Image (cartoon, rainbow, N blue to C red; front, top):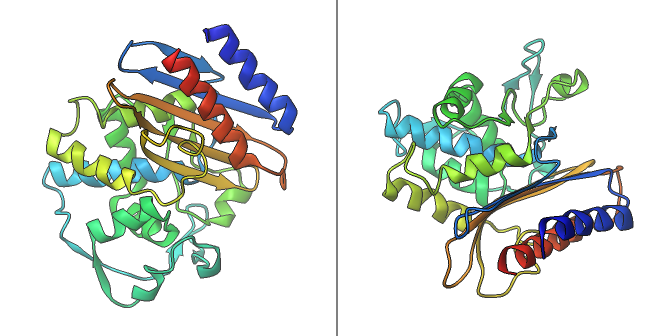
Length: 275
């Protein structure tokens, strides 16, 4: 499959499913090929921004600002970036309940980081984001020369959402973010290995990995809201170097099978990479 065929395949899937737009960016370490389909188009980040929080935490530990074993008080009370009004993470809307059960106690930073990624804990995300601050997260992205990822607020800050103040990403930005886990720019090899192990432990696997061979290992992070369905990460195949891929979709609320759409695009990318 060549570039043109992949572009056409993505657009055919978009039209068949009723999605508004699909953004795809790929970098293959085996061939150094790059592919981009609306790769610089901005999307609501949904939970993909949690990877930026994870990397900022490890960078803060790497530079001596914090230790991953430091403890943080667990509470469910946050302030909007718009007017400082109080909001909370709804437990029944959070994919992870374990952190909610620890409210009133403390947890290690690494104990918050892991469920933030593996079970997409919104409460853990907000605790770490508030602890680190969006400015520190953005400075980490700048230090890693990552463009196309903007983190400005916590999850479920509805006042900010209503004002259009959202965390946003591009497919090319997410690929650049994941490339920090392969390249010797911000993190040592042991740190990169630890970060990848967290991402390999992702429990939601109905998108990027779903239609790939069983031999594929995928370190990734999903993200979903009513109008967006995303997945991004590394795909490791036997006998070759990995490829980084981000697949972002925007669609009408209530559209069926959006996860299957991402899985089908992932399969097209795999066929493109291995052709």
